[in-house]
Each structure stands twice: as C-alpha cells, then as structure tokens.
Length: 501
Image (cartoon, rainbow, N blue to C red; front, side, top):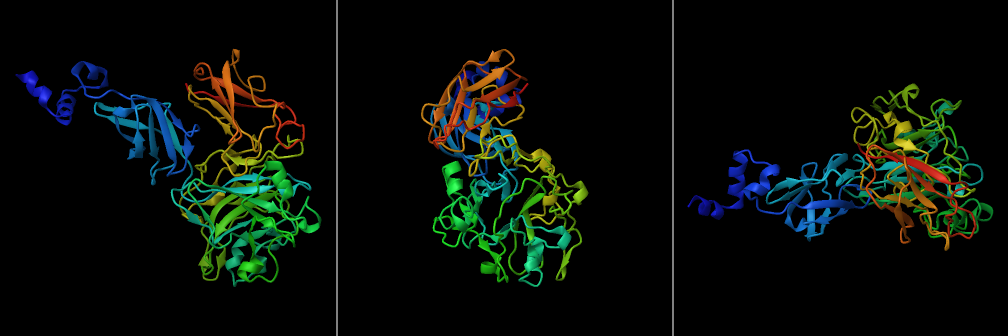
C-alpha cells in the first residue's frame, strides 16, 4: 500500500521527502530518483570566454534531461535542447569571472568542472590591443577596443588620444576648459586626439580596430587612396583610420579631428600619427560637450611613459576645470607602466603587440576615481593585465587558446592558434609544424585548420596530464598567403601553458 502511494506521488514531493531524509547524489540511483544525470562535456566558443549575451553551445550526452542551466546562480536563456547539445545565451548582469555551468534535471543538479565560462570585462568599453611597429611602418599600427558589456555602446561622444605633453601642460581633459582649447593635445606630428563619428555604435562582444591611416606606403600624403600596407599585412582593413590623405577614397571610416567636430583652430591629428615604441600613453575617454570634466573610459601607459624625460602618462588629481575638480588619480610614481616594448620578431611585417590578457582589469580600483563608472583607470596594473608575447590580432580576441602563460587549463582542452591572415597553400598546419610538447615529449594529436577564421586546432589523442607545463610550437614553415615566401615568424615561435591540478 505504501509503495503504491509513493509511486503515485509527484516528483517534487518525492524529492522533498528524500531531501528531508538526507538523501544525496551518491544514493540517488538506489532510492529511485527520476531523470538521468546529464553528462556535459564541452562548451563552445572553445575558449569558453565572452561577454554577457554571448551565445554558447554545450555538448555532451543525456542533455535532454536538463531542465535549466545557470552560471553564477543566474539562469541562462535556452533556445534548444537535444540529447547531445544545448544552445543557450549567457545572461546580462553577471559579474566578471569564471564559474562552472550548473545543470538542473529532475533528480537534482550536476556540473562538470571542465565545463565553465569566463565572463569578460567589467562595465565599460576597454582598450584591448596596441600595435606599434615603429620606424616608418606606422601604417600597420593600430589601437583595438572591445565592448565586454551586455549592451551596445554609442561612441558618438568618445575620443581617443595619445597626445599628452606634460612639460607644456597639454592634456586631453582641457578639451572642456573654455572650449575649443587647442592645448588639449601635444601638437606633436606623431600624436593625435580624435573623435568617433556621430552614430558609431559598438555592439556587445565586438572588437573595433582603429588604424593609424594611409599617410605612408601609399604615395605622397596618401594620394594613392587606401591603407595599402595595413591591408597587405592583415588581409583586412581597419574599421576606422586616424589619418587620411587629401585624396582619400578607400572607403574606411575616418576618425574626426577636433577642428571638424569641436571647432578647434587647427587639426588635432599630426601629419604622421603613430604609436611610438617607448614613453606613450593611450587614453579612451568620453565628454558630453557641456560638462567641466571628461570621463576616462580606459587608459594604458607603456614603454616608460611614467619615467620618460617628457612623461606622457597622466594624473588629474586635484585639477580644476571651470567649477569642477577631478578626484584622485594614481600618482605617476605608483602607476604600473608597462615598461617592456614588444618583441619585433616579425619578418618586418605584423608586429608583436601589447595585448590585454586580463579582461577584469587586474587590481584596478573601482570606486572613487575619474572613470566612466567611478573607476580609477590609472590604477590598473598594466604590467600584469597586458603582455607582448603574441603577434598582432586586429579585430579579434587574443590569438592563442589556451593563452600564453595561462594556468589551470582544463585537461580536456584542445589547443588553438589564430593567424592574423590566411595560410599559404602547401604550408597548412600539421603535426610537423604545429606541435604540443609535454614532459614526455611530443603529445600525439590531430591537427586541422579552420580556414574560415584562419585558426589551427590541435586535439590531443588523450587528456592532458594534471599540473603539467606544456609548450606549443608554431614553426616558421607556416606561411601567410601574401606571396612573401616567408613564415609568419622569423624563427619557430613557442609559448607555454599549465594544466589544472
């Protein structure tokens, strides 16, 4: 009689009774839980990283028993579920960080420590890469920004500059001091302060590349029309260019100088803008055109910008404009300037670049600052959150997954490397020119190339060993499809990562 009554109870009531009796997953099969525990195995995008609103695909077995998926305790929006695949969207409002997906089914919940997701960034647009070729190669230099938030951001009132001049008291925040104020930038030929065109929007998860322009390698003053050297290097155009020639007809959207957009007396873009190899600071900021104070969006100083004879790193502590005064920035002595210049192992083509490896902005102070959300953008420890260990990747995320130096890598990970342009026929990555090495030597693997995104994928035949350092080697036998006959790298290129315990 009792057994018949129990069989007729609802699953919810049965679960409540069993919970009250102290049941757990170890005896769930014995007491007859309803539902087969799902076995999630992998999440894509493979790097398991993205912004809020990122679409993810979770694969495994028994997934048709799943009734819900959550991340950081917040439910994902699920569009479809089959026995082997779940299509879902990472919800808005999540904190930055990494967490396991938790899967609900009629018998309880389960998770796989290897099936997790990293929510990138904080709450505003950020600088993610700075490419500086140096010398006469400014045309393949660029600045990349990224939107890690769950919302589209209108960039109409956003500005980009590298034009501080401390010795002559020329700073970008003077744009709001009795405007127009021509002292808002240095006036140096290699510097600039420019504005995004009205109506420019950066979508959630989108990267935007701002090239230096077509003033070189393209005829006198860019009269050839088009940023030829950038395109020849990366097989793509930048989204925007800072400097345009007098006969500019390349179709690339031009950034606005302040003469055109803010009534300045002269152009605020130098005749040869570029990103020098040393003593530089790049600032993304916003100004509504009325307030006394601008708001920092992101800031990156490098190459000794805090200690140069004419330091271009900045601090606005106590500075008053109109009737308003800035809050405290980090002092120059305490700013974590990235002092090392990128390795120029490039065959004279695409440079190694400063690339963001920490989308959570490290130890940045998030209250009491002059940033758009109250952050002190000058407090970020750039020497930790940026690295110079990878070649340029304009317009897409960091090229290596796992990343160079990454720790706690999943034992089931494959290894991916994305080239900045297509691979030449006959030099396709294979087990002889794209290799993974562990403590016992070469790791038996399968190597494929996804030509649609110029990404090579190395899949180990067996799971990786725990708590082990692995070395990835990309040989110079792999060549770009630009007809140069040279490898992507002058010599074989290596980097390392370490697996989870």
